[in-house]
Image (tube, rainbow, N blue to C red):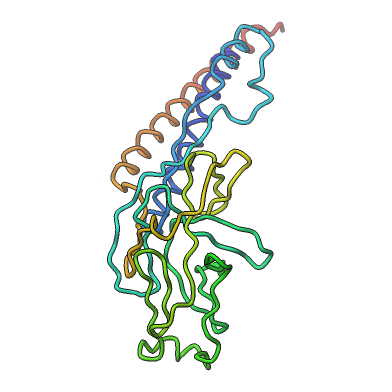
Length: 260
């Protein structure tokens, strides 16, 4: 009976993880550049060995599930905002930099301009160009209101990544292409960092294809995620019922085995 409870519990762990991952996918269905996550089960051989009282690794590991990111391209959404940029390349990423100099990769091309003239994301990571983060001419910056007036600043981002401010070129975007996408490590809903095994390169100007005034949406299919969540909830409830039934049977057995 203990083994039955253990088996049911081990089956519930992946379902719990799937629920959490699916809920996060649904929550980010409208997040620009978000890449959905999926879950797969692992360590089943180790688990089976433990059932037969053979020493294995399953009890020392985290729950016997792993996750991977679906990097399929999301649909392009037209916004007509000059600070929205989409990369027409499944393996292409913008390069961001935080205040500590750490670099991040993202598919989310939704940017804004700070009072200091920096082009940043919503969490204030700076957009990098070939020669470092962009800083628009401070002579044009007197207040945030001036940035919001389209007549004050004419920002053009060409298809090959050149940024022009009031018809004056100020630099080129740095776009990298990652060959082994699964080597990237997610650090937030839309940002990734490279690992030791990541194979990537900077794209040449002629290889870049951008769309200004567009953003790449999330690749989450909300209907599919909702159906999967319902199925996972049912499986989780089934495991819970198995544990409850075995627990009641165990209690009855213990009561019957007592000597008075």
